[in-house]
Image 1 (cartoon, rainbow, N blue to C red):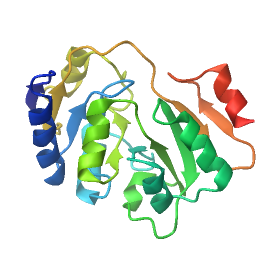
Image 2: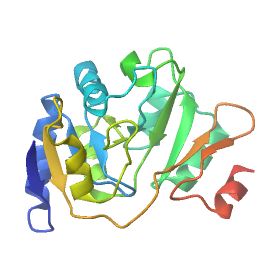
Image 3: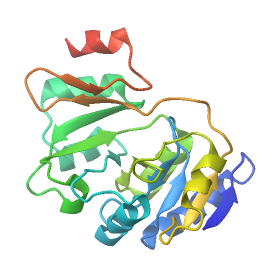
Length: 212
């Protein structure tokens, strides 16, 4: 693993290095607006497979993705007017939304596990948003941890999990310890009535009001 400490002074250089890494099909550990995540090109089947190996994750479990904007979302999933209005209200932010994927979705099936849906999110975080916009492609947005172990906002805990493992991320963007937070709230919009699957970082009563 190559570890790059990021700061305001070297921000653009680190972004460029991360972009090169992702284009090569590599997997990076990246800070987000919630916890550290494993980020790779969501369209690259081999890169996604690598994430499953790194996380020791069962292939039946789906992986959520980061997107650039609602326009990108519409290329991947079915979105009606009410759903689009909801997305524009909650994003960018720590809310992952589950929607039915299109049959001609460009993403590899391994991302979805056994599901006919995709979990999508536009994070409220400069670094991740810069990567998605400059690459103009969706990126994986799964937590940086080995399955069954704790996800974290503390960089040393994360690096400790992957140390001495056979499969490791290629690049680590070290932003130090992030502000303590929960993973994103997950909302299923595939049925007539929205369903909250996980009360996470951005769960508020106001969110329920928007859903009604």
